[in-house]
Length: 195
Image (cartoon, rainbow, N blue to C red; front, top):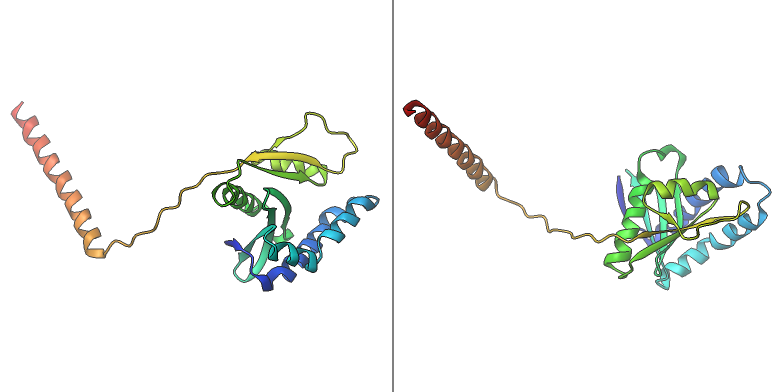
């Protein structure tokens, strides 16, 4: 699974994936919730998402399984997660958690933010976000609320440069370590024999 920032030419696919997941997971289960649907369709247009990305207001990550876009996650530069959609065939593989973690790291390391937020919509999704480290912003949320606001600390991550160690060095280290163990073993045996 490859997770990376989206490329400009992949935005239409991300919008299609978001629409497909929304139709299956939300619209089908909440047909009377027209206010939510209206907001989604106004926000999730290729033109709007492209414009937000071009202005730097929105950062989008995508997860690919081979060449197939499996999931998409977006966060504003103020640290608010606005999208998290996973293709149904890729559920229960921790892809959403990996994408949210990527956003939390980016918030800390690139944007200098201490917190990220999300509006869990529909409210039933709040349980998932709580399991991955988010907490409720408000102590009380109305039973008929369209979403539940949550927050989580951003994550500091230090990345180390991978260094390639030449094979002869690895072999020398292995043999050297083996030699040290052998010598220590011999000293131990001789010492025990003398006692």
